[in-house]
Image (cartoon, rainbow, N blue to C red):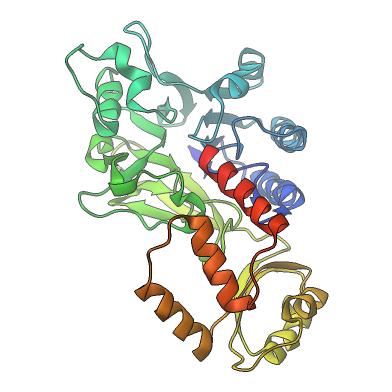
Length: 385
């Protein structure tokens, strides 16, 4: 039994202010070509299909094109999909009965009542059945109806409760799809900027990996860097695209798993993929960075300038060379001293005031009324999200 494991497509996501729609369409097209090449029996999509609970029309179109392309491949590929924390259960559930007839299985909510259980899909190969259990993202409140009234569930307790109610045949091969923050004891997975906003401070949403040790393979979503959690057969596959500058060094890939007969270790391989645009950080003097434009001018770039003297319109000059300039920072003796002084006076009343002080220190001019209003709107939007 061979399957592809992908997750966290985040269709509709922007990188700073840049739309990634065409990048996502391109990379999903590459997944389709890899399916044709390697002919897996199934495709596992482990949550966060969309970046927002109310996706745009473009996001729906991109995903529809992808599923249509996959469903047209011969031999047929079974698609198994779970909802992540970014997804809307109601919207993702739409047309699920129709899609099931086309070998596309979607699970959007965990069991919430005593008569409900995890969705289970059974596929067959030459060694017998493979049981796939679909566990979408859950919060403790989602499964409160399964617990005793006096039981105070946390995230780990909620996952334990849901998994403990299932009847497994451990003489057969079992695979779990899950979208949670799994840890190996005190060892947490490596995270990056693009998913940290979805994780609870202090790891309150963490789940110990020991809860899933009985499965032959655990296909995880939620963390954007590919990595194992304890055992190699418990794995985050990572995203298909880089969604932050902190992922600059990531090697994006599709995880391909081949299950052999029961008792044998699964073969876990990675298939490298790479879009036409990369994400990178560049540091140096203005002239040095401008000189790299011919090589990296089409990539998404974060620039740090190290010039000590005042520069003439650096952002405008960089934008002429770099079409997708994400941000511009200055790191020299003067800014380091300013930051040091700011650190000694870190008594700002609000994030807006902190930014105002920083802006005045660097630009030597106060924020205009229009800029102040614009920043207030941004901060209010961030609080809402």
